[in-house]
Length: 127
Image 1 (cartoon, rainbow, N blue to C red):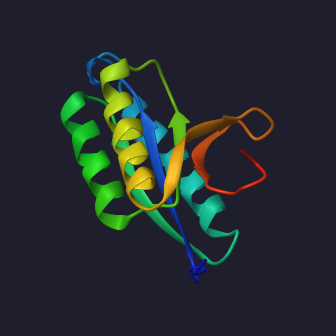
Image 2: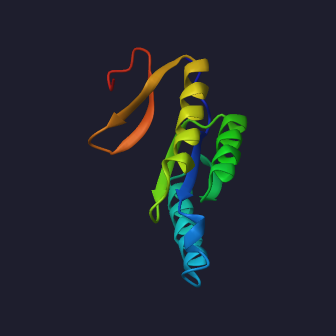
């Protein structure tokens, strides 16, 4: 197995675009929180962060999915900032599963201890 020099980490937040006109400053505040999360991830070292921003509608979900596919992320962190529709989350997750399946990984697994959704590599004892 060839080891990558850097771990490519995807990050996206979810929200609901109909909230932004109702609550002044909410979107900007949530984007600020997400930026801090990104900074914490990068501080772990040896990480290339791919931040897809705040996904708040199906079109932005498709854009985030395309970005993660293009950058071939190794893992995706989802920041749940507010209520969101499944149509803003599922395309990203479904596309990630396609990425990992195409590069020799099996289906996504939910790890209860870490609460992460990640690819389960063939032969991994974590599966």
